[in-house]
Length: 304
Ligand code: HSE
Image (cartoon, rainbow, N blue to C red; front, side):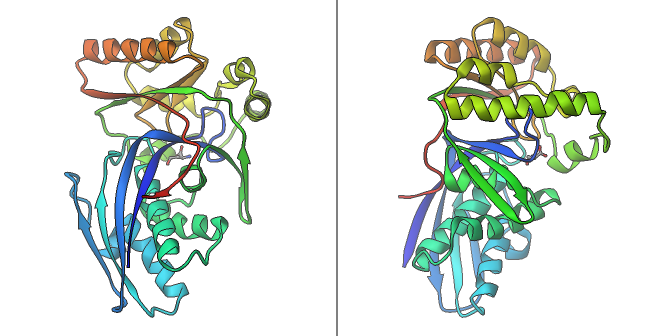
């Protein structure tokens, strides 16, 4: 028995919602093939250029599959073939795509015995391996699609949000920002006045998505806690944000823990103009980059 899945990139945090908000993208996406085998082992083959570990215990998809096998009393194992297109360390949920893809594909092979909450729990083992901390803001939209709110991970409480159709422009400058480092540099304490601004923005953003109010979404895409610290690691960040908004984008910010930057627009022409701004800035800075003009994916990991 074999199954192939398509695992979407995701934008975690959505600017103000650190560790609690995320959305799935149409592009880029990884491909993964999974086969059930009798032997209780995980064999991994990488079909890409990233040279990721093939030992199950050290591989994001591998640890997820091991957790599922343990839950099923190690009565079987898996062969997995991974073709990554979401570059590791891009801030576009590369590890989540591997973790969520493995969980969904295994569930499909087992006759869909697990709930979405179970799959998020399994996939979090992969995120823990990749970033040292369990967080579900990439995994959840990767599994469920659309825009998701993780109100709590202990206990897991996931809310799928509505969203108006929006275009997403992404630039991935080819510099490395490790999620673990990008978390380490954050201040552990927050001023009450900043907290008030932040929860106003989070509430506004959630209401904006639910109501399809794109102006409210735009006004709420502001982060006074995380972005001022992390954006220092990303050259060109302030210029891209200012000029994209001048060009008509609703707003945006760091994708996950960076270095990718994303901007939301209501029109495709605006999204393309934003792409041109991103290209111009990184070209001028002499930093290699990759851009995407895409949209919010309605579906999460899909069996193909
Ligand atoms: N919420 C996480 C962070 C996402 O910003 O650190 C990165 O994986």
